Length: 250
Ligand code: URA
Ligand code: SF4
Image: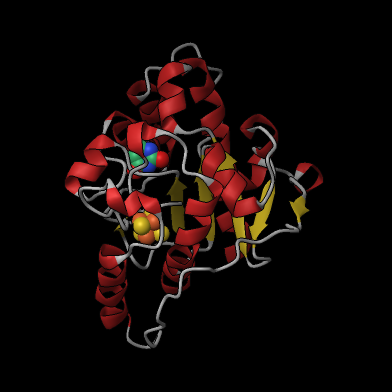
């Protein structure tokens, strides 16, 4: 799809009307989107996620073997109490060579039933958001969550559950080597950044995960389903994410 159509597709797909249209996040337009003088601050993160889970390192030179090994480790994991109530582990899905990694919170009921992240209503909205910037779970993005097992009644994962699972996420980031992480929602943002500010204050800036991977924060699609007016802001966040990539490439 031509870049110029993407914002329109985003707005249509997400049901947003009467939006003052901004340029789409393309190589040509994003330089204008965020002039250097207004470029968001890059903020050092004081408290990176520490690995707790003992994730066996398979040589990075053989990712073909590393992924099945990682998925087998996740499937067998009993490091936190979520293992007792899950149906399936939900490791992640998508393009393993993607330059974007989307990190959500935790599997919900449909994800637990199918073993794939973001397949429920929030997932459909996420797909529409990604489509608007020319990405899909087959190309250009890898999608995972802070924890790989569903918390009962869709409660937020507890800090110790997130901590227990952090080694798997670390391994996924090491294998994909994304150039950008899009943290969707407060649980992802808080765990990745080690901060507890509201999403409204964390978005609009470029953070760093462990001092090496840029992180852009946006609203969780489940929240957008409840607060549709915030969808407009997500377009700006997607533009910022795309702009970070353009700048890292240039
Ligand atoms: N919400 C999430 O954060 N992750 C999923 O996989 C599904 C819904
Ligand atoms: Fe293991 Fe993570 Fe599942 Fe907890 S949530 S049992 S740490 S895979």
